Length: 296
Image (cartoon, rainbow, N blue to C red; front, side, top):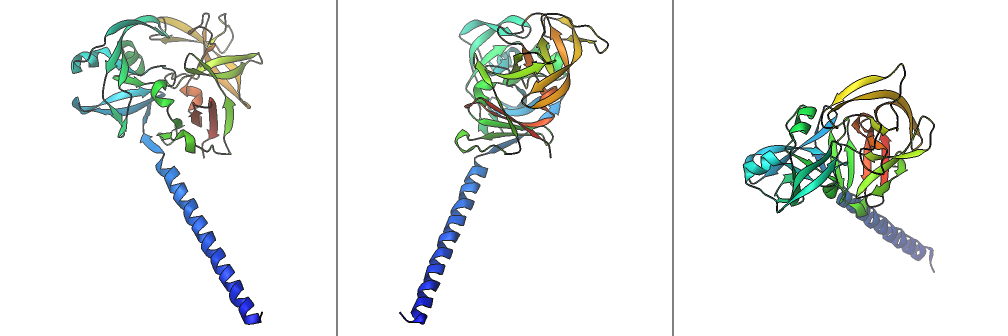
């Protein structure tokens, strides 16, 4: 074969390779665009170490204020709001909460959306008066884990962004640390070693403004002990003390509010925003993984 023919074949091969490479790169960019588009990003307010979002409903022109709460097994509507909107539930049910057992209405059918994302249609009706007083702001409702677990959720506390991602397309940041969670009654529990002790399981709770609530079985004493009056938690004054906590491979000194008796059966307490807000937090509910990533 003449050298010119070889050159033409080589040029054709290179041309085809360039086209294939360009096609592959275009497909990769398109796939990245799809993944980017699959992430719904919602702005929130971080006030009193709680996550507040606005919820729209066709029932009234004004938006409503909801808390984002991974520690709530179901989404909740305030009973005062239910009366205002003429909503009612079929059954009265007993509800176990941090403050003990109270009465709720189920199911409350409500149409709402958060930044254009349709929320679940069924809610638990509860009196949220005490929660509003403790939070320093009117709470119209709570977005619970029943809605959030349909997504991989990413909470960027620093930039006040809540991202809802498609579970099939989620790829964790290699710089984040993965913590294996345990499921119990639909809730997610974080393994924590406190003061060098054995592993204990605390509820992942973005509806908790404190760093930690810990069921120690005894009231601790020491120079760093303080007192807290916390509304809604059995209406009592609780003690708090500094503890050393190991979560994943991370060690931290946290203020833990101490309880002698479990808040929920089989759980050792709550891990809340006081600690979580130090990170970008991602919850992959499907695989029961928590990712902690340092803020840039």
